[in-house]
Amino acid sequence: MSAEPVRPDAGGAMPPATVKVWDPFVRVFHWSLVALFVFAFLTGDEWQGPHEIAGYVIAGLVAARVIWGLVGSRNARFASFVRSPAEVIRFLGKTARFSAPRHLGHNPAGGAMILVLLVAIGAIATTGYMMTTDAYWGVRWVKEAHEAVVYSTLGLVALHVAGVVLASVEHRENLVRAMFTGRKRAPGPDDLA
Image (cartoon, rainbow, N blue to C red; front, side, top):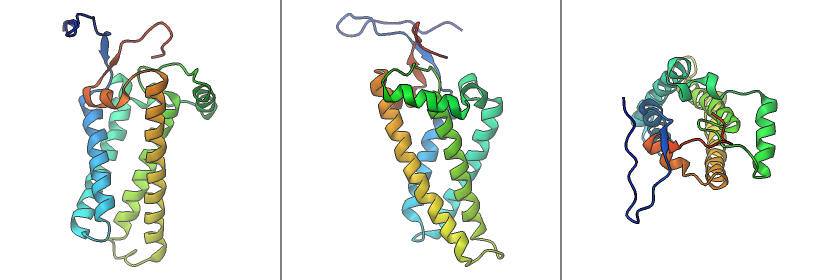
């Protein structure tokens, strides 16, 4: 398979070379999860049937992402981005000083956030399902747990977005666009895989 040719822009300048980082599954998963989470949050108790369907689809997406994290493309695999807590803390310290290395795939903090978000969304789906069963129908602590995890997840999403913005500024790279196109700037000599 040959690489795509690099063409000059309208002013004749050569754009920086890019490489494929995020496969279609990761991108479709990410944006589907965003849309469904927003939909489920907005419908809540107001539109129960579609809310529950969104919850089941989200649970299926999370399950598929876990499987893809074990067998998927290089940058999608957990083995490529799960790091120790000490490494995540070191990375965050470097980020605070704007001296963190650029990673082609997920950086250590991003990898930790993925794991935390997958667990949180799994907890939302689990408690949501529990509320539909005879055993837990109307049980107050299940509803309270469901709502608490939802609002905690909103906080995590805010941290995730802030991290994406910070990394985009620090490394002069549009990470949101990369999650749409699947491509990022080719690695330089100081970048980490």
